Amino acid sequence: MTRLLKGKEAGEALTQKARQQVTELEKMGVTPTLLVIHVGEDPGNLSYEKGIEKRCTALGAAFRRLVLPSDLSEEDLLEVIRKANEDREIHGVLLFRPLPPHLDARRIENALLPEKDVDGMTDLSLAGVFAGRKVGFSPCTAQACMEILDYYGIDCCGKHAVVIGRSLVVGKPAAMMLLSRNATVTICHTRTKDLPAIARSADILIAAAGKPKIIGKDYMRNGQVILDVGIHAAEGGKLCGDVDGEQAEGTAAALTPVPGGVGTVTSVVLVCHVIEAALRQTEKRFDDRSGTR
Ligand code: NAD
Image (cartoon, rainbow, N blue to C red; front, side, top):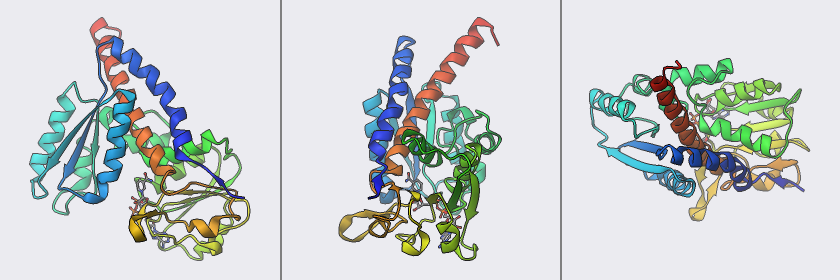
């Protein structure tokens, strides 16, 4: 039987440290605050955003939402980010992407201060992931995958981990995190030859191609751990992942469900990052004032 790696349980475990940090912050009169920025409204982001807001409330963090017109200029968006950088009451910023094509996404993403970059989108945050240093924050979805592996005691050391997808949001950072856990990592993408054979050779398979149910029986081998990152609208208003769950049942040793798997942990990781950001920024201010830096 395939074990379901449920995001709710893994997420709950994460919130324990966050609750303690919120209590510490309360004593210093600080409410960790997330600013979510939309450039245009995309109904596809709604359920993820609702999940984040719910988690913020549950953990004692504040949630602010800014919806900007989709035709706003690059300079105007940069100004919004500059203001968020300067605002001491905002500790973390989540910018929903992709941005409209008339905007230079990398320029805008890199305008955010790494200490407020709670979704790991700046070059500095990503460099931190690649160098194994705490600069900024790691991309939440990739980290959520690691939190699930850790929570369920899945040891990566010496295992063959195959990551399908090479985006900066999921595939590449997840591969680096697996490497730092001593897995032997293969990254696959649209030009990879004989993907099913490579996928079958995995002990741990991370599916982040963004294609509904492409991971069928021919990609699987008995006893694999499969993390399904994909989220897609399926028939009847349901959601499905990149993995065909029915085909994985009985073959995979363990699988994250969709919904209720990686996505659930991703929103918890994001709010934990906001709380951690608030703590780092507050401690730095205290240190600066007392001259210990
Ligand atoms: P993306 O489109 O930026 O990247 C997809 C990657 O998969 C690319 O690198 C591409 O080379 C590769 N790919 C696409 N089709 C492939 C194929 N047929 N074979 C092999 N490789 C293929 O997407 P992304 O932002 O990395 O997101 C991936 C998926 O994860 C999407 O379904 C997205 O909705 C989902 N997602 C989930 C969460 C979460 O919290 N669970 C968060 C972010 C993204």
